[in-house]
Image 1 (cartoon, rainbow, N blue to C red):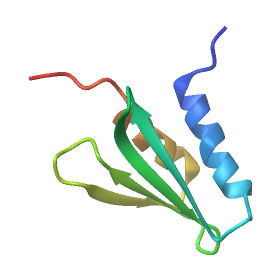
Image 2 (cartoon, rainbow, N blue to C red; image 1 turned 45 degrees about the vertical axis):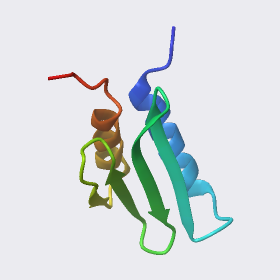
Image 3 (tube, helix red, strand yellow; image 1 turned 180 degrees about the horizontal axis):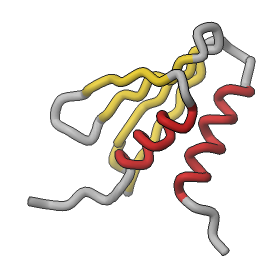
Length: 83
């Protein structure tokens, strides 16, 4: 059975929390080579910053909860529906 996408996202975010090589961890999430989000985790503040690249204008959201950050990323990496 294949691991769920949400579980894979949570694993990546968890790895960011546990990696103490620097105070700022950064990961990118792409779909078919297209960037959808950049996520930064600050070890000092324990805040995830999610930059949304799925729209024409980039927006930034902050989360202090790994689950909320994962859900936001999950929504961003869904296939885009063409209008």
